[in-house]
Amino acid sequence: MAAEADGPLKRLLVPILLPEKCYDQLFVQWDLLHVPCLKILLSKGLGLGIVAGSLLVKLPQVFKILGAKSAEGLSLQSVMLELVALTGTMVYSITNNFPFRPAFLPPNS
Image (cartoon, rainbow, N blue to C red; front, side, top):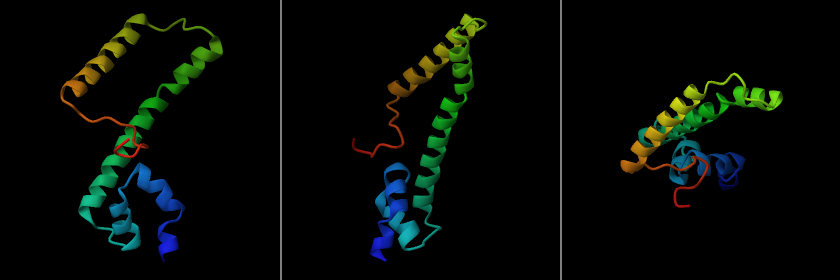
């Protein structure tokens, strides 16, 4: 049973979505309704999904620019407005000491 608990699923989930104690709670003890661990899983899963979605939404535009080897047709005003919005969000998060780290890094790295 211990060998199964340390399998590939644990190596994938523990550094990315779950602390080890929650992995043990959910997948070793099969306590699937453990609310604190479900909150952690949901929070990290949604955060990872939002970051991935934010990156993926820009890929078609990047590929089109690279394929055409030109940014002709892009509105400078819209790019600058997006930059101002992202900068404002970043400054707000930094001033409020919101933690940011990629979801794939362990907490103390």
